Length: 211
Image (cartoon, rainbow, N blue to C red):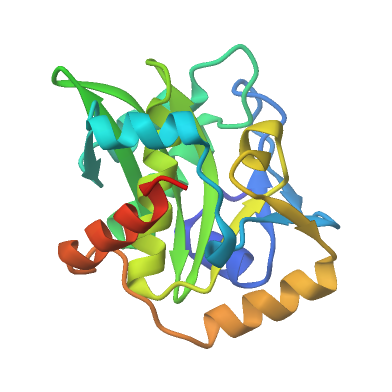
């Protein structure tokens, strides 16, 4: 079986499909196209009040793309994971090509949590997140949303809806509706890494203002 490649990943995400391994030890790659599909509507993201307070305190320093491999390793460091060595290698290749990113929460000079995902045109596909300190992954997620809003993104795909994502307003939509949203996002341009920081900070402020 040929090794998973960055080119395969780009094709898969552009067609609404994503890979997972049965376990970290398995060399098998399985492909998924769930129906319904989980998304977080960027215009209707909900930030819990307690998390807004954490964000305003500035407990974590947010960095972008400074520790992609370490972020993936943190996401895989659990008793059960679908991130095997082949997936780690292929996504790092995707990162080096500019199609994958990590949002990292740092505290006291250490990586405290974060998330990674794939970026194609105006679509961002969230893959996994982890936290070594309370709220570290949640803070990273809110910063991701701010960057996507400021950069003109149209779709934030979470693949499936978990309790963790429900608190941010994640919803399930039929596959046919997801495919329409994906096609529209792939037909538009957005910026991620080069989004002006003042625009990101303004979007973050709108997400964390009291209500």
